Length: 274
Ligand SMILES: [Zn+2]
Image (tube, rainbow, N blue to C red; front, side):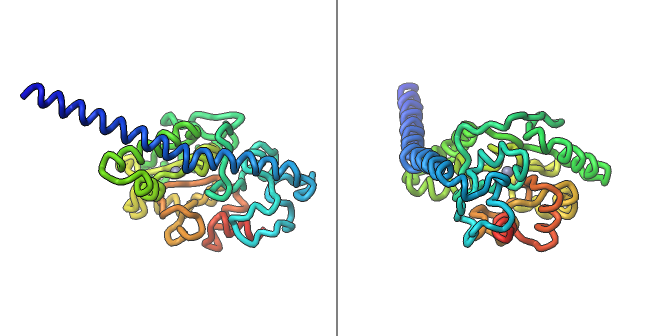
């Protein structure tokens, strides 16, 4: 009996090990290797196209000269990490599947906010003001996630895949399923330190029912006043590539946030019109 138990335990460890290995191999072959190649070729391309974007405005292609036929086209603009390091326009850096962030990008300065999460220091004041005003309005809010390194994101993704493979899915199916709920490494705004996940303190769960909490309703209504937007609104999956996340707030600066809020659009659409 004891031996059988041991055997079953060993078999479980063995299968989990196989699932972990398969998840990691799949990630390397299907995502990490192509992403690193894409980033390095984008870097090569952008260094060859620098004159196109103009020396005065290294961010999103300058004042309306970006072709921007599709949010997926970088149109000769700087790669995300280059724009993030810039003194102007850094807050409008687009990070998504078409604009992945280099695996070695780390914000130049991180500031820890109350609760233990860190963010890019350039957004800390605005975030603290928003949180403080929310609390003054009776909203008990908590930041449950801020800056996350590329490695942490890769671990989260691998964990998601491992769980699904162990549950019986093939690596391909596990990938398709995981990508719906865990942001691919390199495409998470958390790696830039410009995004935070905020929930009601009494309900720190990342699910759609957050949208009905008074805390989220306050944030959705007021976040633009502090330069933040709800980055992945309901019904915008086709544009953002991410399902509705009524907790993920992204700093874009007050002017852009006010326009995005007033027009009810996404960051992709806003940048396309610039
Ligand atoms: Zn988030």
